[in-house]
Structure formats: structure tokens, C-alpha cells
Length: 115
Image (tube, rainbow, N blue to C red; front, side):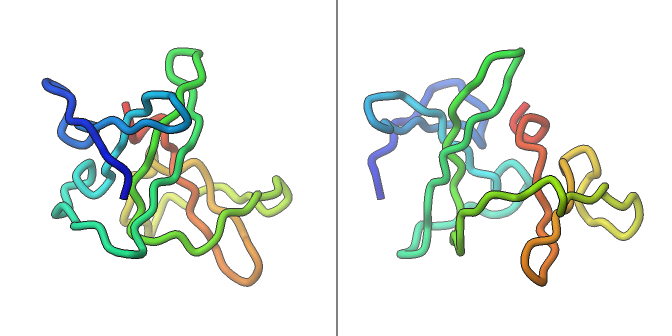
């Protein structure tokens, strides 16, 4: 694990920052954001750095992940609208569902989740 620094007064799920190639990046713990218990890191824990748009500006954010199986590009041809029934997640937290290989992947709306 890389060192983190606590940020006083920050939201509980964005309470730490990390140094990525000389840049200070906020670190989001989505378990806390969604009311799940915090998770101690394991050998499988990863930090996925993503770029999102906040107020029209690109911002880098680290996301704690229990495990990462693969990083890939999703082509627009595989994108489908989110069904409004049968979902346990709030629909505003989902950008779209994509068909990848033989599985469906839910792609979260990170801008919405982090704001």
C-alpha cells in the first residue's frame, strides 16, 4: 500500500489524499460512501486513478477497489441504457450498462457518486 494523508474536515469517504507521480490526488472509499463497513486492505486491494469532470474541470481521483480483474476500454457499440426496474443501485449513480465479452458490466456515474 502507498502512504496516505488524512485531510481534516473532509467528507468521510474522501478523507485521505495520496501522491501519484508528484500530484496530490483525493482518495475515495466507496464502501464508506455507500454505507458499507470500511475494509482493511489486502494483497488484492488496488487504487484505480480516474479522471472525472467537476464543474467543467478535469480532476484526478483515486478510487479504492477491493480487487481489480482487468482494465479495458468499453466500445460505444456495447453500451445500453440502464433499466429502471430491478436495479438495487440508485439509477442516478449508473452511467450505463455495457456488454463486455459474455457479461454485463455496470459503469458507475462517478461524477454523481463523488459529488
